[in-house]
Structure formats: C-alpha cells, structure tokens
Length: 353
Image 1 (cartoon, rainbow, N blue to C red):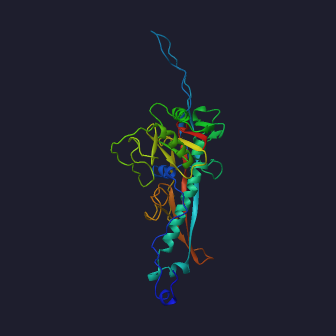
Image 2: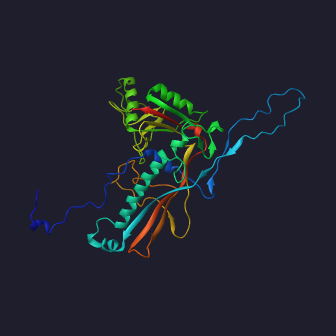
C-alpha cells in the first residue's frame, strides 16, 4: 500500500530493535565441542603422552624362575601447535556519535560485535570439519577421524610408525546401510568407550531416517516429543522411538545422530567427546578480555552460533583508535586447537547420499 507524504512525513517505519540472522548456518557439532572446551593455560604446544604399544616382558612364572628385568619403552608424545582465528570489529567515530538517542534502533558497536562473533564461529566450524593442521590451519575432526591413507601424520607423529593413532576411515562407503554403521561404530568402540555423538549432513541424516521407517510398528501409547537444548542437541537420547511419519530426532544404538549444516557433503562422523575436543587459550594482558557473546537473542535460530554463549579460547582485544583513521578497531579471536589424544575412538564414513 502506497501512503502519501501526509502520513510518511510524520510517521516512522516500525523497525524491530534486533537484527535477524538469515545467513549463519547451524553447527551443533561445533557448539558441542566449544561448550566442553578445556583450558590450555601455558606451554608452547599441547603435547599429550600416549602409549603406542604393549610390553613383551614379564608374563607367567614358575617356582624360583628367573624374572625378566628388561625395560621397554611404550610411550611417546604427540604435539599440537596453538592456532588462532580472528575477525575485526570496526566502527567509525562519527557513526558511533550519531548512533545515539531516540534515533538509535540497535547499538552500532554491539551489532558489529555480534555479527563478527557469529562470523568467527563460521570460520571455526570450517576449522573443525576441514582443518589440516598444516601452517595456520587448525587440526580438526577431518584429520583426527582418519587414517594414514588420508593424513599420514597426526599430532606430529607418523601414523605408519604409530598405527594406534589411526582413526577408522572408510573411503568409499557408497549408500549408507545399517551394516556399515554397525561396522564403523564397532571399529571406534574400545571397551566401554564408544561414540557420544554422530555428525552428518542433512542428506545423510534423511537417508538414515529412511532406513528406520520400515522398522516402525503401530503404537497408540502416549509419548512425549523429544526435547532439544539451546545448542540444538537432543536432550534425552535414551528415550524410545520418536515421531509418527518422519523423525525430529534419531539415534543409533542410543547415541544421537545429529545433522550439522557445516559437515562436508557425504561425511558421516563418529565422534567421542572424551577423545576429541578443543583446548582453548585465554590470552592475557591489559588489552585482552576473555568473554562470551554479549547476549542471547531470539532473532538467531536455535542451534546457530550466536544463540548460545561461546567458550574457552574466545578472546577480544579491546577497541583502539588507529593513528591515521577516525575509527575504533578491536579484534575477536579464538586461540587454541582441536586435539584428539586417542584418534582410534573416532571414525569417518564417506557415503553417497
């Protein structure tokens, strides 16, 4: 409807006091590892010690037999370098000055901060699923949940020499089947340690959903709908079957299968949160702050970075004025790395959709 100047000159537009995110992709996998990040407080690298082989000395003995006193080395150190990722926060002095009073809709600096913080989380999702560990690239699930055929080294160690740090990797899975899921799940299960979450694409999630549909049987019992937390993760993974036609949430052997828009096409990842996570560095100094997102916002979809607080390793270098620019510049950055001390508990299927 076209209004005349008689109205438009005396009536403002109705502008909500929030910015609605129509760009950022959901990444429940990243937020899962972020919220359980551990502190990397000091040290030029993160160097967990692993046992890579069993001893061959000792054993059964008889009466007064001579005992073996051979000492054998079974341990070696991995080594992960600290990595950083950043986004600038820039506002012009004149813009900040004018962005005040009754004419302000959203505070400019806060809007720029939140926008760049979410953008930085997109960079971190890329690091989580595609990082190679080479140069400035972060280590990732891609090189942790793989074997020597894809990444010949991991944590500075040769996977050919130290075969126990190979993850499970099936290069040509083809169409996903229950049998292939079972093989992968069993391959990354050791003792009581098994996957805690499985991450995949929307397409493969739907393919797995289709495998489950023929196994449903009619039931007229009342059951509660599944609940999700603010990270987009299933809260109750031990409940019975969900859904009538189609599922909102699915599991495999009681472990959540999560669709993450940042997972690369064709990937189905078995992850164990006790064996893989982020080591976060909180940078200290008078110009640095360790912080979270400034606020939660219902303008950001659930399960999308920016809807939930961030984690250890999220730093902000405070706003400063450049000598040759009428502005204020700050930097948001993540510091640390994604590390696995036990890659054999991780795995990847490369499936056709």
